[in-house]
Image (cartoon, one colour):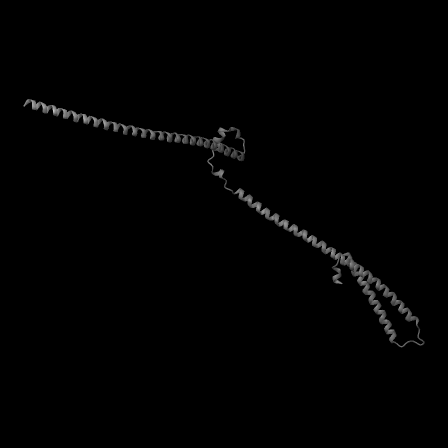
Length: 244
């Protein structure tokens, strides 16, 4: 009876009660049959009577019918219990699936939580470039922009970064303008160099032409000098011959 005390389900308890009644009824029938066989083994009374035997058969028949009723009730309860067990198994399987899904979801949430904590820690420990920027000092910035005197540290830092960005944009525009001026001056210088090169070529041509003309003039002068010398020599010879 110890295992029965551990069962609390009403359906199973009814099955056990029906089984106990069927068992008791079976034992009662067996006792009646044993008594009948024992009486049959004894010498019959004289004269023998059929009335006790008929009553015995009727009693056994009644007990047998009662046993069949208990067995029918036991089968019905057993079938109901089996169906209940199947339904319970199905519900248990569905509940287990739901628990597994919830457990998997919990694991995913735990993983996501650890991932987000890692991201938060990385963001908190991130060395942003603005920390290395040569920003204008706070006092100088507030002196130029007194409207940020009541701003928080975060807003003040953003304003200083924007100020640095604006200043760098202005410097970049100035640098680009100077680069354009430099390129224009380089183009102008290159053009003037090209013009000077052409002028040098023209001057060289002109100088070369002058040298050729000068050579012609020198040759003409040389011929004139030679002719004059010859003429003087002829005149001197005539004078000498006349003198003799």
